[in-house]
Length: 517
Image (cartoon, rainbow, N blue to C red; front, side, top):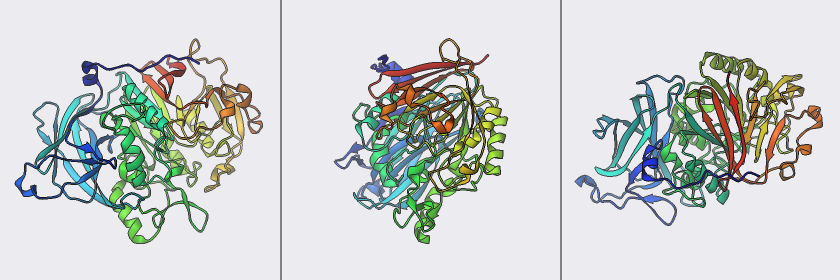
């Protein structure tokens, strides 16, 4: 396999040219992996007050705005989380060191029950608005009058600006491979992260975000066995996945059970993503005693259930993000109309779709979960270039392909794992991503090797294993790597996509490109 590496040391100038980061943090990690402030408050009113413990130091999020790239209308969210101890916070920001704007800070309380502390959490959200495109902004967070954190970020790039992003899924699980993926993704210096779902294991809980996600992706320093301060540097997009709703009710439906897990559906309380999608007809089902469900909804605010499906632009790309869970029905007319409307409205050179459950896989794991295949004709009509998925814990790249569903009844069988959608395949075998770079069809990437246990080891570089009798042995898989964890690295300009797959040691295991005429 190729061993070309992306890892190298940064000099100070390169670090300052990166998309963002925290340059000062008055917090130190304690023995439990949480963050404490040891600074005395400048405000005399708080001299004898206890200080909060931080479960998540300040991190960047995309915020509600995603649809259009409009100068002066950009926004971004800076969020942080603490235990239940109250403090007074202020966030100022600006394009210069004068920091002449003050953000509005809101907070929401959520009870967390886990094996460690069972403490209440307070989530703080600061939305920075009226920002220009592709501009660096500085910010300062103060607590009780004392300086808590300082940093900077860069807003989204407009059309015709080169953009780099990374994609991976099935990641935050506490394994060393998860840490290595975060580290090498950070080393790639992306403008943003596109997560393909199952962002935390095993149940998508707030407590699991604190234990497995923030510790790794918001680490103080980068290291292959530590993680990286990726969340402090760039926005992190994600999609809903099966580990966000792992319980079952009396009707055998997949649900988020707030009696069993009072801190369920952490996707909606930890992430702040665009809210430009429709209210889903098939939302994540929340069950349990009314007070527990109501506490969750109060913390999530307008994000539940609206954040299930959304889209955003970045540079020359348009990104459509969908909930593909077992409770969703992708044959729903309202959903399909919104997808078609969203895709037809963009003028982006490149169009991407991200959802968790892949419609097409050459392996055995999760092969029957084919419900998203029914959307293939819509994607083809609107010239989608790449579909990004996770769920299957390995890396696969398809040939450019078209798919005509013959029977969509299986896709309608919600809350089951057997949702086969048979149909006819048309595969572009001329495309090689090197000499022939203009595909005839959609390319599907599975990038689910983000840290958790790998699937389908027998398929690794073994093409005879990559077809299925149910698909008439259509040879739609071009690359299959299942012996190592990895992430996808994409460089984008108006004419070319350059894609490579980077493994957990920084080596390159696949490389190809797409071009526009």
